Image 1 (cartoon, rainbow, N blue to C red):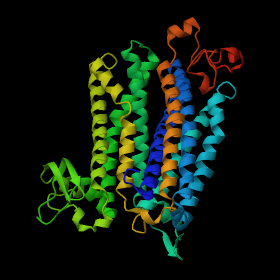
Image 2: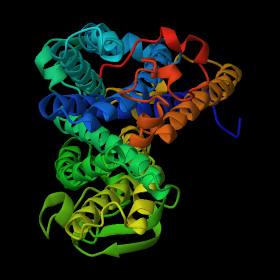
Image 3: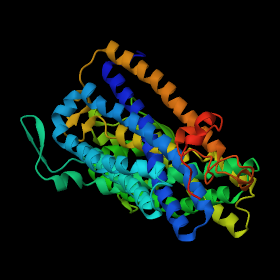
Image 4: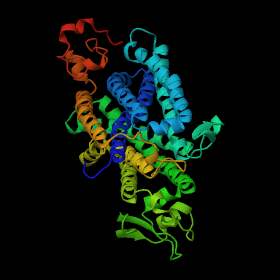
Length: 480
């Protein structure tokens, strides 16, 4: 298939499924915390706008959560089907970590999710807020365990190898491996930013169409405060993460920088743009800034960054991919910072909700967080190659050894099923977003919506008022 072998297709299949999956948890993590903030503000201030936003975004959260669970289960099964040698080698570490995620995070989320979604007028406000907090905490606990497992594969420690298998000897060292704190903070912050721009773009879409009400304004305002405050923090976290990667995975940094040779003895320049050529062992058409690579990565003007030629060819990551995926991630981050600063200037001029150029910019920035997340994961995972467990097990030795025909068939089926199932789910999510929070005019006309008794407390009934007209009288009322 296009000159690829079975191993290549196995890697593509895993990359395809995890790329679909990571989009949903990124939004789920951010939305869960956003909902907790909204309900907390409503309980404190009793302003209806927070309650209405809570009910609007809780429906989107429920659908997104469901798709995340389904896509995650499929991805997890691939460890046994396509990567059984890896499971046999490292399963004593990764298996318990994923089990801890189920026992702590997933059970916590599942236990309180029903109360959060359907208990609004069935339990007291304090208990309902507690349920929302537990779901939000559950998403962060899930992030903790997943990143612990993946980070161990990047910087393994706390183990011994006995009879060709990894045996954990220090679980504290396994979990809190050298890259884990930086990667956990980086991913959690990325999830918050992804959600902020998803919420902000939704608000911008409605404002550009003349739907200006307190709920829409609150959405945009909260999203832009998040961008202003958190995007620069993410840049700082990224810098610390880069220094950690330089220490533990220098080949990855060399590939990210597209830096091949240190024979000149000169400090390392920063290559802004170019095309790393793995065959010619050079970065073609490069545009570089002298000394800046050394300054950013070593915080000095005389030290050099490791070069790709210092590593054997079989140990080099694909620089062509990670060079550009990293720059896409950084580019999105810089645009997020720009959006936050621009919003602050517009607030000062009292033009935040009227500036159409800014609203168009925020609308186009809607997927920026998810693009950055995907680009970041491509950077860290492709940059780890050719290792599946860094320095211990090569990716080529981790596969189940399926035939080319088997991998081709399953990959094609995955693509067809994923685009049909999750395409439908994404389409439904967009219908929910386009509906938006109910306006004051809608309340007066009694057309339903968050805060109205005609609104069913079920996510699948939210996008189309006509979908459940026959049984709408059976739907539980939302508390006023």
